[in-house]
Length: 630
Figure 1: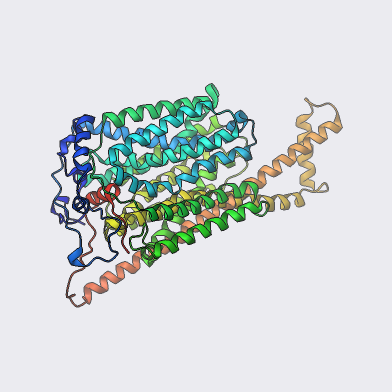
Figure 2: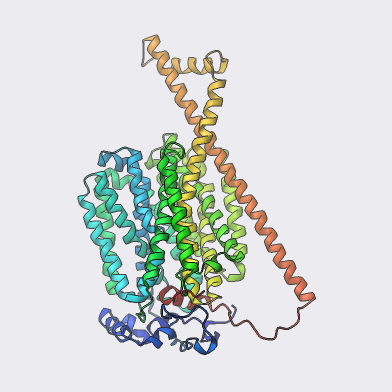
């Protein structure tokens, strides 16, 4: 891992220029026409060219013998640096595409009440917009990897942005809830490729040693900024133009992104026939399973789990569909996913780690905004808080760049857990008088922690997959999707469910304490009646209004106490995870020390499956990964 990319074995994963092995590296900088010609040259390459790029045919045997193994790819051409202006243009395009994708979901989450009003629906009914948007986002990126390999990178980029632009235009004619739900479902499908597209544009102009150290943390930070940035923009945007203004802004950003994709082409990739019919069948079951879980956890806390039987049926559908997908994949010679590798202890450990972090990070998306909504804080008053969150998300991405290495991933996670635990503990002392200014520090710590966690975690997962070969990138991708996209829905649903349960408990306790004979209740009622004296002269009406205000304050206090319980629970989970991580680090250190003192006997042969260099591997795997082998 300490070798430079130039010193790496060329038989390992090819570097970024290898995507256009049939074209000169300068093709990408000479405009769309040259890039198109370069892609045409690799479009009809023979089957052995696909093997040379790391993509094997779908009929390849699951355990090829050394004699039948595909030939090693040729050494990639040397990296050709771009000018500073072109580098900034590509990185700016990545930022625009990433923020466009993030704002799509953020606008719905931040303005669900206003959207419901414009559509003539209740807030509960309008929540289906969020579920419809998330259903395709949970699983479609898994299939897009093979679609990109089979039909070419340039076509993938142009078609993805064009479809998003068309749907932004269609959104202008939404008139009711049904049409809005349908359009949001297709918006979720169209936005799924944008994250990958932003990543490819971010790393395109960077040298191999900076692709992972700078490119990946920055694009992950930009993806995290989107939902918070939507809350910064929404008050002014909705106040001036309503939901139509949101659609017009989305349309404008999609149009600019489409122009940038045509003006700044990526290096073309060889095409290979990698899609099989059973890939589509397996993916349909995976998509159905993820969709069932998404609907259940997004809507479960709204309709309540035990009050709507269809929520249970959604969970059953999800479990049954994923079970069928697992059975299909276990019996395939060239599976879409390597289930046995996904069930290995190392990957299960990584999955649990990613899931725990995603659950505790739900404190930021589902905690503070909803608590302040209960306390009557307007969206305008929340703008400074979310502006701070956006800044620290980006700061976390830049902070990763100087220090990001595979061996430092545990240290990044230790710092992230300390920050999350500290921020959650600070939030657990909220009161009914807490305002956004009091939570800026704690929320900034959590935002920074989320960014410095996700980049190193993604790096570790990719290296674990690539240590087995580029074939396993799809298998890792389903782990990342299930823990981040699906895990976000699960975390938000569980977070809201626990809050509602604890609010009911605290409400019952407070009502028992504040009886009509309670001196505290009598004093509070008298104080409120005195405050209402100048406005209401009728004593009976004044007493009734004072009692209503007291009941409202009791309800708000119960909600704040419930949020404090969940904040403290987040602190406990983060502290437990930190203790487990420190023990794991100590165990690894102790094992390494014992091995140095008592070295094991030399092996007869070295393990050929060594992880390739970070930057060349991720680019090759993300653009031309073959089917996983058993």
